[in-house]
Image 1 (tube, rainbow, N blue to C red):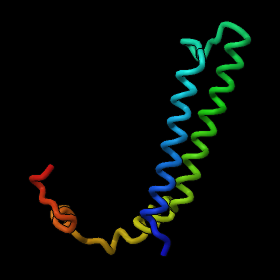
Image 2 (cartoon, rainbow, N blue to C red; image 1 turned 45 degrees about the horizontal axis):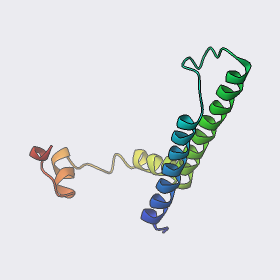
Image 3 (cartoon, one colour; image 1 turned 120 degrees about the horizontal axis):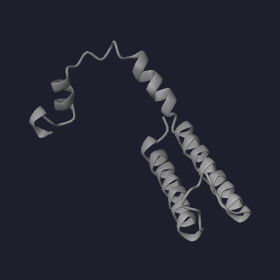
Image 4 (cartoon, rainbow, N blue to C red; image 1 turned 180 degrees about the horizontal axis):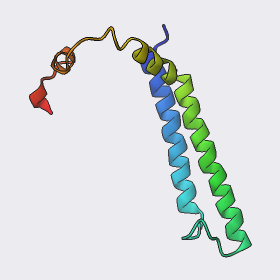
Length: 102
């Protein structure tokens, strides 16, 4: 079995880097206040470029999820939900909590 913690950390760091890059792009580019109605051709180009960067970030985040096999884990959990008959209190106790903790 793969080391899921290491994979998660690697993907989390890559996703964090991508979000930070997008934040820098927003700060360093003069986007119009109304992204749906740019006033000049230059603003149209900037908005288009920015939209492409946001799309790429979304694709990267989706790929991180695929790499982490998130869909498979959700499917496994759904398929095995009948096997998990623990109550809410039992689940909390299983991870070291009690209902009053929250």
